[in-house]
Image (tube, rainbow, N blue to C red; front, side, top):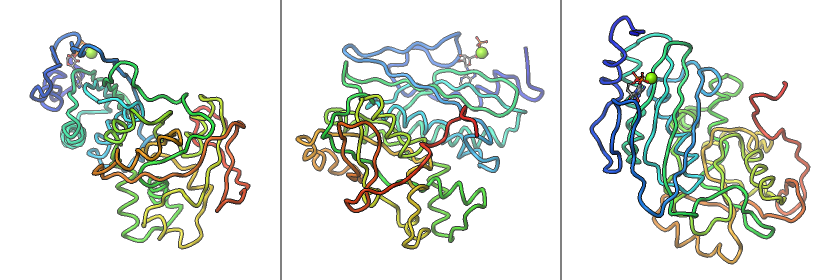
Length: 327
Ligand code: ADP
Ligand code: MG
């Protein structure tokens, strides 16, 4: 059934979502009832899916190019946290109507990031309804080498890539609950709308990290997920949390720690490394263009404790966003 007035569904797919084949391991891409990919021997496949809903996962005013970018970025970030090499994606798109300008910009944002990581869009679905974007990503790792959440052990050191809290400041600015100067606003909005998934860092960490997760729902909540899965606790040193120049500027010496540890959408990697292996990180990350910072240590006693410059610091933070929690 043709659900579209202007172009047929097939024409829309052809125009906005078909691209030249870019991977030799795609046996059959868009156009049949299913796609066929060929996994190299000795590898595991890693699969993840995420849905973005307007007004929930991105503000209504988000430019379509940023929506296309972010929809893929959040999925790439999940594969990064697994230490997987991304390869194939499918896209289930629900649109309120056919707006070709919107589709062109959305597709450009999506394919811009897909090309950067050699990801091929191999299929999808198109329906009419309230705007929602679901991308399923698939990648691979050498058999058994995937990073997981459950491998942290007491004594392991806790690290994070990049900087924490920028996207949350950007969101606060969009919601007009905080006023940012022009330079900080530009940085924080870029971090909110067009995050750079840490795919390369995830690959480098494969042989050395004992556990990993991507920071999507806030540092405290995502660290807590590693700790719960691993059956351990941790001490987190607030002053070690890496803040961008933009964030430091916003806080002007009065850092709001509850906000820093609870805001989401950073898409950095949070990972643990056995202390005897930590020295290898310098060499592993040489030329990576990705800062990593040690922010704490895994402890045998369950629970997350905060310190500020070595002193216990009572901080009560909700452990982040939960779609189903009562307000
Ligand atoms: P079917 O009715 O068999 O599900 P569709 O008409 O939905 O087939 O899709 C035709 C082809 O186009 C399939 O290969 C499907 O994977 C692909 N496709 C549909 N929508 C999209 C999309 N938004 N992005 C990429 N490929 C898509
Ligand atoms: Mg279909």
